[in-house]
Amino acid sequence: MNAYHQTQDNTDSAEQMLSMLLDGAVEVLDIAPDLHDTAIERYGEVGTWLAKNGSPGWEIHSQGSFLLGTVVRPNTETGEYDIDLVCRLPLQRDSTTKEELKQRVGDQLVAYQRWKQRQGHTDGPESLEARRRCWTLGYPGFHLDVLPAIPDEEHPPTGILLTDKKLREWQHSNPLGYAKWFRARSELSRALLEKRLVASVAKVPEHHIRSTLQRLVQILKWHCMLFFAEDTDHRPPSILLTTLAGRAYRGEDDLFTAVRNVLAAMPRFIEERDGQWWVPNPAHEEENFTDKWNEYPERRQAFLTWFGEITTIMDNLALTESKGLHVVYSQLIKSFAPGPVMHSFASYGARMKAPTGQRMSTTGLLSATATGPRRKPNTNYGQHPGARG
Image 1: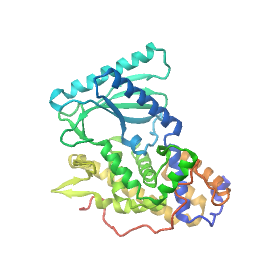
Image 2: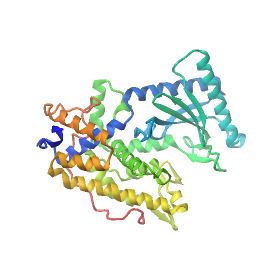
Image 3: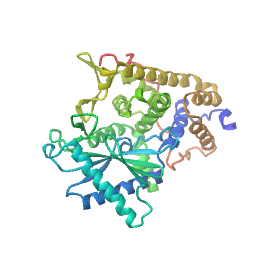
Image 4: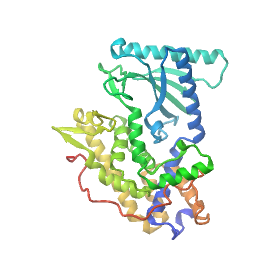
């Protein structure tokens, strides 16, 4: 506990100290590199098997937080990571129905599971379950949600159409296009290039590196998950938080500064179009990530309540950092889960004992937040969330 009360090292700015603590906490919730690699191996084998045994042209790839590098361990009893995949079949829209498409993929996944069992393999899926939009393969520590899809001919080359048994129409999506946009936003950070250079020397795969934008999205998702733990129906979708954060991010290297600046700027990207709330998908402008706000106004209010809470937390942290680590610790414990916070403070104490210039993160890379000039948060926006864009 001494680490919590020690005086802040003068070689770190206040923002850097807070950044390292936040980074260390959310790092605990990130998917471990070995589990990440295992997941890639598992869905790679599934994809290879489907491509070989299904019709020609079947493809499988990741999407969502796993593809974006913003995974956060769920706050559930199992704590299993949810990894979304797309199984894309080269079919035209008028050649199949949503029901036929889903069943076709499901039949092949059943065949794959049986093949693994017949071969005596112990690394196959432990379960296979049909859900609303996907098929779920269960593995130790994570599950793969396989979403059947076909090409969206109106939005080539990466647009897709998805099934949903609760909706009559095909659902548009473009996960590869969205990932390209998010990556470009992440690369606004100068520190990311330095981290990649360090990782190349250490022979660390690039997908194990986290940018400032990825980390700040993880922080927003983490707090949102805890805030709505007892009210998941009103929890804002992670794609909405990710999109607003990505649009608001301006390349800050310091994590704490980036979080505060992003929160200050996010309201600018919530639009009102002809009386309807809009946050368009950067990769598919016709898709609205706040469409449910127009149907269920209470969901917008829930977002505003959460947004006000996390903004207040970050403002309070900025005020308490000069009062010592024990005060910062108390503030973080109240706002986030104790386990990751305690781990981060213990790691921070160990880092401070290391020689200057050799402070490494627990992943073995230079800290994501130990570089960059000290900056004040940009507070020139001044609009309340949901104001006219």
